[in-house]
Image 1 (cartoon, rainbow, N blue to C red):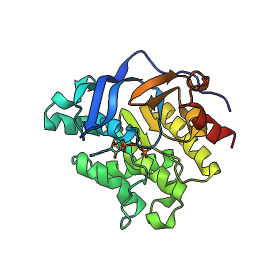
Image 2 (image 1 turned 90 degrees about the vertical axis):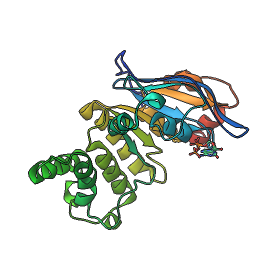
Image 3 (image 1 turned 180 degrees about the vertical axis):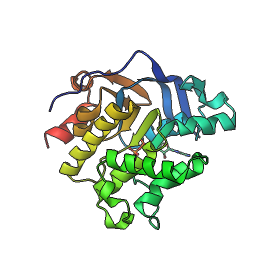
Length: 256
Ligand SMILES: Nc1ncnc2c1ncn2[C@@H]1O[C@H](COP(=O)(O)OP(=O)(O)OP(=O)(O)O)[C@@H](O)[C@H]1O
């Protein structure tokens, strides 16, 4: 598979410097430095429990750092007012691992929900066209009147992404987008992540354990090892190593 070419600009949309976070005596993040550039897809890898979710929660202000600075779209996350934090979160779309669709709502209602809640001045016609445009973008317009339970796991994942995108976030955070999907559906989700980048000009962090996904979507890869991003670069640069903490990731995905 071809490795992705860089698309990023020099502008940083997320800047993380010297970030530390512990829970009691358990030191999870121990000096994290990481930047996300505008229009790039950055893949974050790391063993279970290394702190990837903690990092994302700090980025969206759900957890506060013990030390260090996290700047998102030029705002220092733990120094802004709660109102500014809520506004900032609208610009950062978070696609959850389990899609978190509302089971009792149709697909149309699922997509309408964030729009109506956050942009109360839209007319019914504007809401309808936004929903239809976004469903079309993820290739699932035909499911508009169906219930989530009638869709496959891959389709639900797409709807989850559409529902996040409908607020037109500048930054997308994907949490294990291909987890639990068959290989063909994984490839479809990888393509969708790339289409989203091209069509909506988003900058994204993709957390994954799936190296096929990492290679297909990542302009850059960062690997969390012992509380720091010790390896960052292209896919090849990160994995061209005999580091015993890194090699098993590659071997498990590609040699097994
Ligand atoms: N609110 C919390 N209170 C106490 N410990 C926490 C809290 N949140 C996370 N942790 C701990 O921090 C560590 C890192 O958790 P995190 O969920 O970020 O891992 P992860 O890298 O996302 O793992 P996975 O790949 O399995 O999702 C874990 O040991 C977890 O138990």
